[in-house]
Amino acid sequence: MDFLKSVFTHPAFFGFVGGLIVGAVFLVMSWMNHLRTKKELKKFQKHLSDKLEMEGEHLARLKADLEKMRGENENLRMKVGAGAIQNSAQGLERELELYARAEKAMILSAPGFAQAWEAAKDGAHRELQEVERGKSLPRRIFRKFFAGGTGAEGGAKLLTTKEAEVAPANGAEAAGH
Image (cartoon, rainbow, N blue to C red; front, top):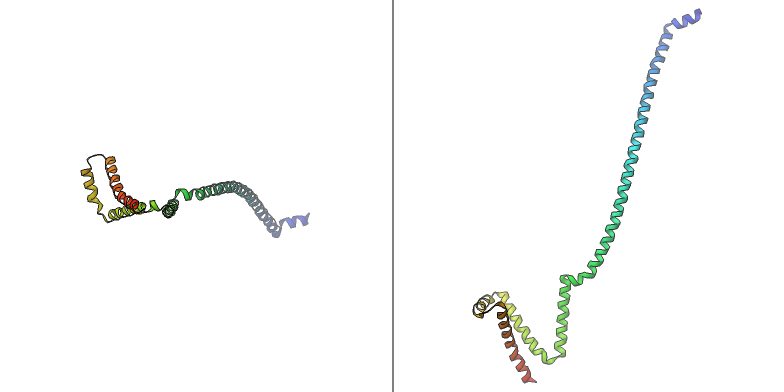
């Protein structure tokens, strides 16, 4: 017993026991930090899985919207491609070119009509040039003052004026044949 008493009372024993106590305290603190970190890791893993799930759903919705938009885009492209010629200025230009070609073909195939048509076209061309130059403004003003009726009657008088210009051309054509 003396041996045990001397061992337990020796200063090295107190240092050893003190070291064990300090080591146990650090072990408990380390274990608590490990548990807290493990709990935090689980929380972050759950948060990450929730976030990835939400982003996956969002990505799936975006892909569905993208496919829907692509389908709509294709439908609109087909509609525009089919209706562009009919509805746009290019369609109108194409139709004008078609009428011009038909007119030329008609002039070549119907000689009696050609001279009257060309005279009427030249008269209309001269009128348009006068309008573009600004010379027709006084003519329009005087026509309104001296027409004496509504716009429809003035239009009828204008039509008779054009017919009178075409009539001598028709008379010359009839005399030529």
